[in-house]
Amino acid sequence: MQSVEYKPGDLVIYTVSKQSPHPGPRARSIHPSESGEDYAYVVDKFWIVVELLADGQLILATRKGKRRTVAAADPLLKKAGWWQRLRHRRRFPAKELLGEQ
Image 1 (spheres, rainbow, N blue to C red):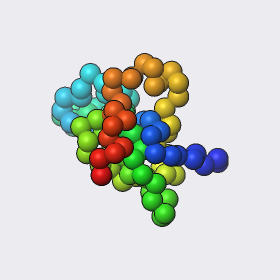
Image 2 (image 1 turned 90 degrees about the horizontal axis):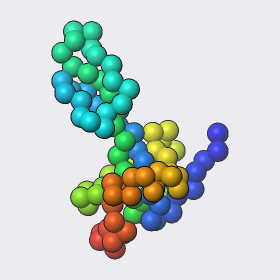
Image 3 (image 1 turned 90 degrees about the vertical axis):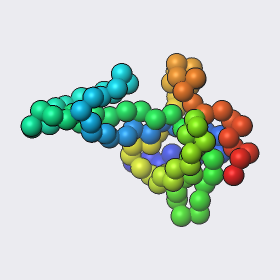
């Protein structure tokens, strides 16, 4: 499998697994639990690469400025293509977050 090279400023999409009784409007792959009280689903998060760490980790920023650390090789992380950047442009963090550390 080919590894993806990331650099600060790259827009990325991270797929997060969640579970709750009420999936939101952006939930997909929704499956009810055996008891029927909860649902398991995934939601895409739109983040920006802030920094690359020497150990292969990435520091990512959310739209509200929170920081997350994720392995660059994580299969749930992918670079946003041109269509995704265009379609979801309002959901990605602003580039100004790169300067705040």
